[in-house]
Image (tube, rainbow, N blue to C red; front, side, top):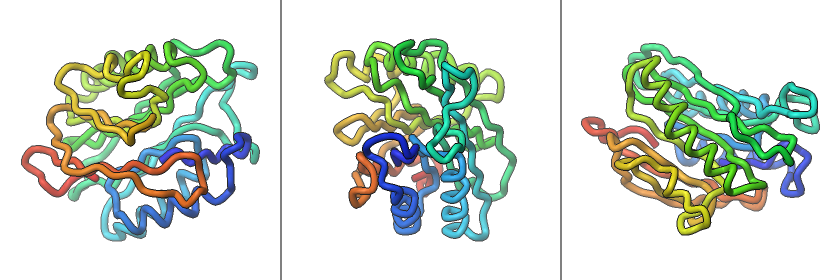
Length: 239
């Protein structure tokens, strides 16, 4: 989900988080990637997912985009840190999780927002990641995609042990574009998209069972992308 909820962009409506909660309740996803959100939006939607799975473990994580002029975090109009988030319904029994995140070494210096990446590593189960890549330069977006899939995620596997990994986010790159999003996807990875800029990329442990876009009723400038994946040996998770 890209909720355009900073309060600063023209696509802001103030209603996207409410609509996102309705979609989460209707679809019961296991993983939710959130782009263009304020920190408290992640906490609010975590409560929604926890209501969907009241007897299970639901965790959240947030990573602020950097703000080059101040050297601190980017901020929403309401003053909260602005960036990306993840929600995850973890399998039972809960074995713990670790959060990894970072700011990309390559940024568009003409853009004050410094893009970030974020992963929730669920011990012995899966590694879920999200990012919102540079919107102002496809070349920079491609370099960031290369770094995430070629360096950051492999380093997470080395530090925490390999787990099946899924990346969901607004990559600001297209299938068939110039540059083409496929040029940063490692060999053997699966990839599907919404026909535009939102993509799901996953290691070969997964199989794509279904994909569809979900209307956000005009509350943001992106539809949501719902993909159901099967991990080998576990046909019910994750979505």
